[in-house]
Length: 218
Image 1 (tube, rainbow, N blue to C red):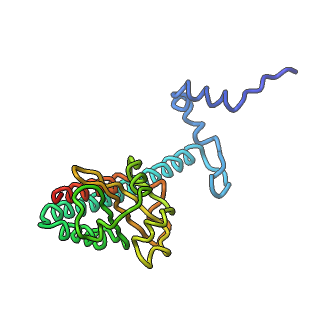
Image 2 (image 1 turned 90 degrees about the horizontal axis):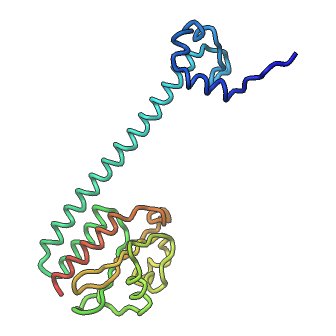
Image 3 (image 1 turned 30 degrees about the vertical axis):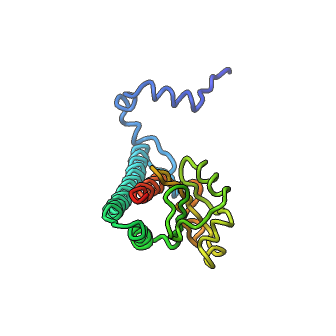
């Protein structure tokens, strides 16, 4: 005897094409049994649907909590950036302005190591204006956005003194504004603090703020 076998895909497509099927055959919801997703015991298709909806709800709740956490973290960073902006605007000298920047990065943003170098016009008698190589200048000029990761030139490591050999992650942010060229480097002993895939929006803003603040004294 020749029998046509209906595939699983055909059954699934039929149910998709006929959404009122179980409305017309409601008794099947209690008659058809399916395996419990965790215990393996047989349960009705209606019970299984309730479990699916409950799992989806829990998944959505988890995502909502993540979104709320991200929003709260962004709000906190935004407040810190606002305080830093005000502090930089109030600086009376380049030295005091840079001190405000170092203090904010260390206390508000918990960044353990920070180094800044400026070059070009307006050189001043500050450590931040110590000579840098052409390689560093070329590196900074070629950065369209902050560069994060485990590697940094040996010259840059040297800016951190004895701590340089112990640092495991870096964020190199170019400083570019009217009369200002330079490089802001954040570093940490934690290899995961600054990693290649991390977002750099706030780092970019930080570089723009620092460069704009320094440009007032050129």
